[in-house]
Each structure stands twice: as C-alpha cells, then as structure tokens.
Image (cartoon, rainbow, N blue to C red; front, side, top):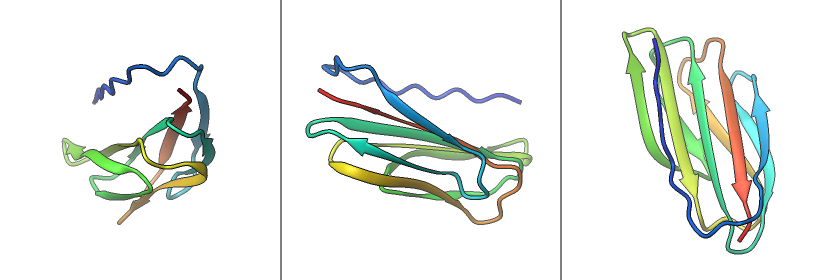
Length: 102
C-alpha cells in the first residue's frame, strides 16, 4: 500500500521550514513569507476523505478501501498560517507541512 505525490516548486531558493503532526486531524502552523508557498500531505488508516484548511486540495483518494491520502498547496498565504486536514472519519492520522520563501 503506497501512494506518491509530487509538487513542483520553482524560483524558491530559501530552504523549507516544516512541521509534522500525528493529531486526529493533522495540523501544522508555519509562517509563510511574502511570495512564499506551502504544501501539505496527510494520511489516515481509513478510506476517508479530507477537507484541507488553508490549502488548495490537489488530491484526495483512498487505496484499497483501507487508507486515505490527501494533499494540497498554497501560494497566496502570508504570515503565520494554520494548515489542517479535517478527516471525516480519522484513524491513526499523520501529516507533514512545508513552506518556502522566495
């Protein structure tokens, strides 16, 4: 059971800052610099869907009716921003978030 997602970011030369979460609804609060961007991805041990907060959903799918995967990106947030994946029926969730500066 595996899923792969690729986000292509260009023109961002500052090393990313990241956060991880194993909360029921994975949450990370990071500061997004002006002209920066953010990405996030999460999984849960149930075939359920997520509604990302402060991220535009790029994918949301289940694998073998056992695992849910969700990811998104944002290139308009500025300042301290909370990113969350709100699962409808979470179970053993985990998430990762990263931001880049220009």
